[in-house]
Amino acid sequence: MSSSVMPTSMKGDGRPPAAVSARGLRKSYGDKTVLDGIDLCIPAGSVFALLGPNGAGKTTAVKILSTLITADGGELRVGGHDPAADPQAVRAAIGVTGQFSAVDGLITGEENMLLMADLHHLPRPEGRRVTAGLLERFDLTEAAKKPASTYSGGMKRRLDIAMTLVGNPRIIFLDEPTTGLDPRSRHNMWGIIRELVSDGVTVLLTTQYLDEADELADRIAVLHDGRIAAEGTADELKRLVPGGHVRLRFTDPAAYRSAASALRETTGDDEALTLQIPSDGSQRELRSILDWLDSTGIEAEELTVHTPDLDDVFFALTSSSTSTPNTPRQTGQFKENVR
Image 1: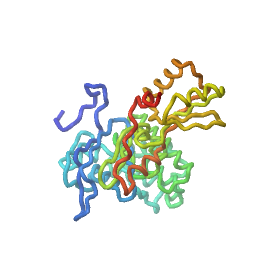
Image 2: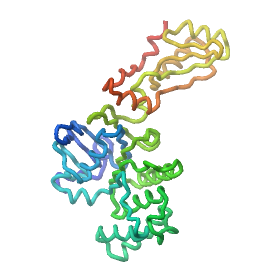
Image 3: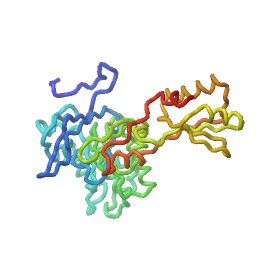
Image 4: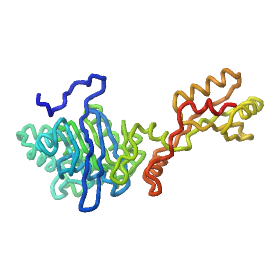
C-alpha cells in the first residue's frame, strides 16, 4: 500500500478513517476569494452536510474534491488520493450528482444507464446486469423503456443517482440533490441516501434545506464567506445560539412558587405554573436540575428541553452583521442560577 492511500481499517482511536479530508483549502477567482482555507474531515460511511447561502462556496468545494477544477492551495485527500496529483484514482473512487441533472432526455432511462456502463468500461453483460439491478433498486424498471424526457422531477433525480452508482463508488458527492423536488420526492430521496450509507458509502451533501441536513447528516459544517463558521452534529450546532431552555411544569402551586423564588434568570407563567430555565440542553445541566429538584423535595410534573433549530443556527452564523454566534452557555450554568 502506498503512503498516499488511507487504510481501510479503523484508526487507532476507534474512529473510522477519513474518506475525504481537506486542510487549508483555498480557491479564488481573480480578486474574489471563494474558499478561504477551509478544513474538512469526513469519516468513511457517514453523511456530511455542507450548508451555506448561495455563493458561499459549496459547489466550488465539491468541484475541487471531485477533480473538476483545481484548488489554489491546501492539502486534499479523497479516498486516500490527492485530486491534483492522481485525479484518475479519485475519479475511480467517487460518484457525483450535480445540481443539474446529467440525464439525457432524448434517450430512455435504460439507455442512459447503459451509456454510463460503457463509460465505465463494463463488459456488455455486466453493464446490463448492473443496469437492471439499479433500475429495480430505484423503482424505475417500469419506466426504463420510456424517454427520460417523460420522467417526473423525482424520477429524473432517482435516475441521476442510479447513473452515479453504475461504477460502484464508495464516496458520493450530492450537490443539492433535492432542489426543486416535491415533499414526497424529497423524502424518497432521503431514503435512498440512508440506504447508501447503510451499505458503507460516504456521502458529502450540499444543501440549502436545513431540515434535510438535520434528518440525514452525521455532521454539519456551515460555510459562510468562504470559511467554516461552525461544524458539529446538529445538536451541537443548535447549542451555539441563545434561546435554549428547560421548561418545568408544576401541578402544585406551592412547588411552583418555591422553585420560582429559588431560581434566578427564569421566566415564569403563573397561570400555567411553568418555569423556563436558560440551558444548553446538555446532559450535565439536566442532571443538575434533576439533582436540585431531588435535594429540595420540589416535584415538577414535567420537564422538557427546548433548543434552537437549525434555522436559528443558520441565520446566526450567516448574518451579515456578525460572523460568529453568541458564546454558548457553558454547562453547569444552572447551578449559578440557584440562590
